[in-house]
Length: 471
Image 1 (spheres, rainbow, N blue to C red):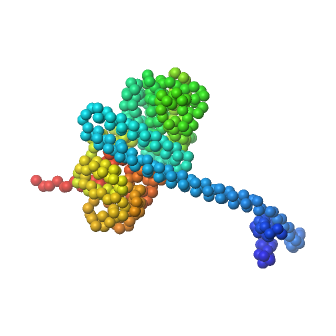
Image 2 (image 1 turned 90 degrees about the vertical axis):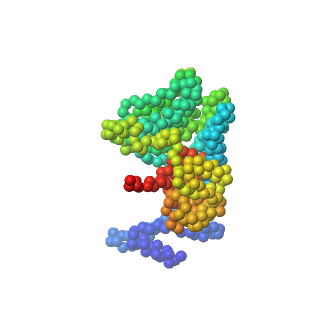
């Protein structure tokens, strides 16, 4: 390309040096990629006296770059396939758990026979155990796929730890051991971190301590550390009087699927995932988990995480100290009593017959009127024909014909402004955002928890109170 070469040289004359890549045809017929650099040479008066050209064969380099890009593309495609597989597995595993756990609750509410109630409690307990295993496997897979992201939300640390201890105390008492909850020094009234993940870590640590302790107690102690010029740290230690561990067991303790030994696995069960997941979560929160242990003497685990935006306890009004904040992070905001859904008209969009019957039964028992359709297309058609008939829509997101995402978009495009709650078994990172982006107001993860779902509906679709009549 003579013209191209002339332009190349002309640029070198102006800039002093110019470098470009060219493709040359070798005498053997193969194409060669060459990097050609031309420097303009001038005498003392600035007159051009010649050119210095350096040609470098970069054919192999370009081949390596192509192979690297191809490998990167393949890795990204594999990662995308893995993410889709995890999402599908989450859906396939969690959806039947809604029916198993939900109908167990329904039968427990109705059953008065003590023997039958005991059998149902066994089903419920083992269903919850299976769900924990499913969650552990999916969490580990999400972490390894790089899909686990941390939220940063305001939370009262004392309220969070109190709730965890209260929830775990029943398990400890079932083994005849004591669960002690302590606070060493003042705690901030509010901190910013991911409360769901911190709660998961502490539950895992306490659950492990209870599992491996037959006599004595488990002590949970929470402290707050302020470091000058660095982020503050929240420390939660879990100490037990259990069987303890040998030094060689500690070396692999946080490896996925690692357990103490075969006899321990047979006696205590478990997948060996809880501690591995907990440590990775702690590290993603800017901290870590440390452990000390002696065989026969027990173990001590300490999780430390970075916190931001802390409020000192003495900055808080007296009525709002020690976990009494209205935004307290707790299992439930209304105690054990279920709120009522009288006068609520609900459209349930769900393709699974078992879950249709279960969710509709729970909502009707709470006083709601429920209309059921089997897919997103039916939901859109129903709302076109009955635009003012419902107060809220519960939308399953994975359905045939028309999924919940597209159905929600169509409803919003057609002017439907009332609340839509996504029901999904995916529970993958980013799924909530995807539901909100589609137009949903909130998000409930399968297996559906009756109390949480009813409270969510009550919050999003409140019944207007009539004005007081004149007497």
